[in-house]
Length: 192
Image (tube, rainbow, N blue to C red):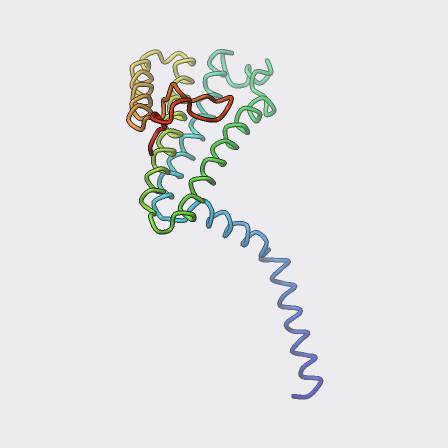
């Protein structure tokens, strides 16, 4: 190859690379790949995540609905400053962060137990089920707050099912000392 051909080839590679960086944005691709790697290490994680995200969206919508109902309409609630982006974001931000932390922990769990993925998937299923029940409970509470008292039976059912999950998995342990982060009696350590 001649020097001019090499120079032309290098210039073409440079142009191609700069177009990729400007138009495709490989950083976003790397970010999405990293998030997918951590949050979805197994296909079993996708449906619960979709269900949980739908429940989160429903929670926000029903909260807006409940506030609007109390104020006599959506625009009246906005005028009365009951619905503001700052107040709604504050509560939603905390909830999203806590759910994201649990999702990341569950995703990393399967990476640290590659020889027994069933254990990680079982623990993740319990965690996602608990988060889902919590979100659905919030949705129903919002609807009851909006005046749909006919849903109280459903709220009782959700609370009962949530407590059954906790009792089945022995998460409710009265000997746990949160101050020392230890169990007072080693015989009662919950087994998952």
